[in-house]
Image (cartoon, rainbow, N blue to C red; front, side, top):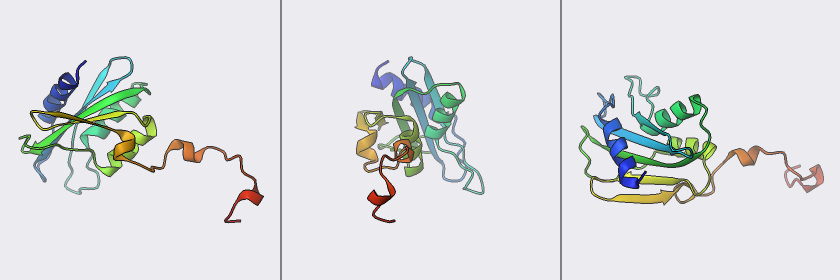
Length: 146
């Protein structure tokens, strides 16, 4: 699957967005290591807080189906579905990616003409990850806060 193929799937997913408040429609297409692709669209809510982004819809659908290895995601968006510039994942979506993806996970943004690639570590440096919750090898004497 090429980057443009993945971007095209994200474009199609964007058409399914429910965005009556912001009118900013977003689509995402997530490529799993086994070649399966999951798509998602943003789904807004009048209370705003329950709104969910396209990227998280794709990730949560994949995780629901047992997927745990991810290669890349394409993200597209635009006001009333018209793509005029690059759309990048919000901070919450980047943190969700951090939960499931390695540093070299690719994030593709598409402006309708060009696909731009970044890695997760480039978009979310110095992030908090599951490895931060691993048992430490240090002793209480090594703890500067003790």
